[in-house]
Length: 553
Image (cartoon, rainbow, N blue to C red; front, side, top):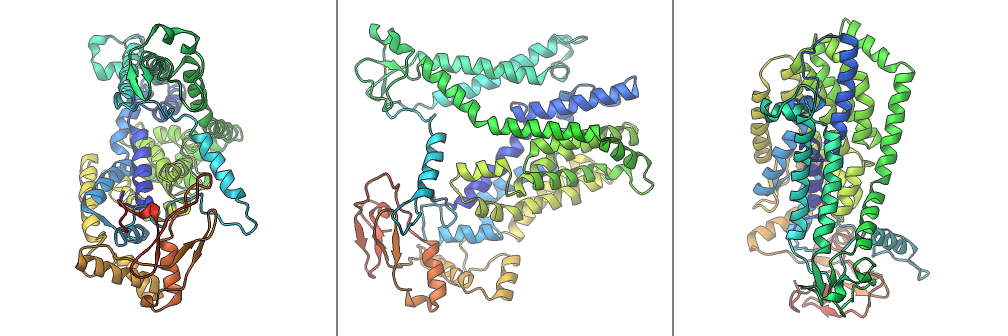
């Protein structure tokens, strides 16, 4: 790909959670709406009469989207970094390790579970990782299954259609709502949890039906024969997918049910986290902590209600960072803050929406900076990036956006210094300015780093970073990759032996770091290890897996 695994994991993580938390097509949003609705019911019961905000959790959710400063600003920043090719902090260093040296394996941060060494000839850790990956790959298609884009796009479009259909159906059937009241009015009275449930079930059935009606043979789609509708239509195909005697469905009934259950298995841990979060929330309410927080907010002489959007954002960020769960954070914080906010602000809609948004966006922000967050772990796994490297390189961006969210978002908007639209506009401008003035092109003429990395380099005299800086200048001047040729020799199954340090780099320590940085990943232990080792012009060795059309890179 020509991009570091750290950058890939950052793009995945910082677009997945913000989008999932604001687009009303995910279970994430359904959970948010459920929590909002529970608090609205409490407020309506305690206050009596009409509320100054909509009584529908879905309507409040929609109103809160424009106050989600962290999610929106992050979605401003990510495309800018991609388009301009600029970075700062540890991400800049990670990208240079890939771009300057022309790597195609994801760089030093790539997760390589198959390079474990063992003096006793055993590879227990590698075997454990292989077992984990095989468990997650069980839903992969058979080898003879033809890949067609419509089999991916079709279910997604079906899911969107069914969710909106059931949103409209539940909303139009609600008491006091008529279809002629308008789309937003109907959506505001819909039942999103029911819509997500029935939409998911309908999509699963339609998808399974589409796969049952497509037949394959010898790796291609084909017409069914009479034998295609025998009991093989329901049974599981053989493990290799080599059912070449007669055309068979892309997915049999048995395999469809098996895939559905395996997908459910993968979210079981999330259900446990949610159950524990709800239990924690119930304990908090049971011991009276919600009443204590309410008293502090309602009767404090120093706490101004206009600071509540900022407080809710920072508290949610901290809890999500410590616990590693955004859903658990929302379940804990909503009962503590939302009802007192409505009372103390006298039902001010902007403060109420800002507090709701602060809780929801703070939960996402804490997730992005937490080493134990489920979304962080899944993003690093999906991108094959080492978890620690992913968190370290992503943290500066997350902290930057957190500062923006507070300084130009929750504080001034909460105090009515300017409107929410102005805050969003300032966020876009600040994202552009930060990208161009703090961010640095990955390969540039002087090899300079960003301001903070240059300061660290000046203080620490880090020779490793200095060498990368010199190589960046060389790459820019030559217009080609810089080649480092440590002597690497294959010495057995999944093992490597490093040769002498390259004298061109002066310091043996620097050379060893560079060798570690460009270490050649070993293939899967289960594969054959009779690899061809090609000697380059300087005496170094390159694996055949790193050759392009037989030519060393």
